[in-house]
Image (cartoon, rainbow, N blue to C red; front, side, top):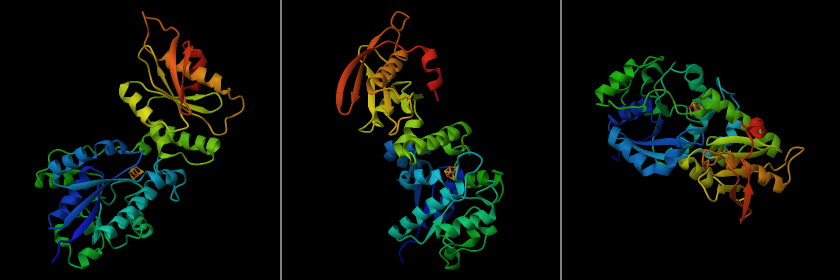
Length: 348
Ligand code: SF4
């Protein structure tokens, strides 16, 4: 008989690690999916092989990354079940992930899905009625097994079919971590991430910054932000120039590289020519607001900001040359540093 396969939703937190291991301990092959979006764990895509090797080495789990950006970014604009405390659409996020996992389950010929949820652990998304709603709306009723709290829930199809022994599952509930820590010790797992999640949508500051971008993109561009907009929002110093044009400056070499890599064809890129300084990216509003500066004035303002944050010479900031790339063409501007009073209201 061929080996039974399950698809697991793998956040990388202890609960998801344990959920995989509980199922693997029953001789079932587990393919773990680590979903990424611009709001969480996107940086892993750049080092996928190392990440997979690390998870395999630490926990013996085979994981693959799945980029959910397209579709997810639009979902965040208007989630049918609303937001949590901040800009986090947890219920719809889980439904979205489960739908994708169900599609992958079919592709892989897997028999069921696994998640590390624990009944009552989170106020909104892990109440019994919410767990049920998420299962129903994702089309996963009966095929989603939650090994850490399964014995507090009705038996799922893989249990009823004898693919999984219910006696090997657990009955955890609530916010305490004691049961998980004991189980981790049984599996010989001592190194695991802290429970605090890495989702920026649940962060009060980042969440409201992201919410602001959604509002602004709706007004300025008439649509939800693109995935690259979100990634750009989460890097560097952010400015809103007159006319609602969006400008971002790197704060270090790493951010300069990220910003350059995020440039779209219609963005402007600015760099200092003769001395070190930040990379600037200007993403122009499609419908500039009233009083928007003309192209040359806008270029001068952006270059003035680049010079303002560029390296000083002899303790002073002086004028400097800035290379501007726009519409595939390059030109050099000489710009004086903008005064702090000029741009104080542009910082966002
Ligand atoms: S915290 Fe973020 S990743 Fe987790 S369910 Fe909520 S929105 Fe999704």
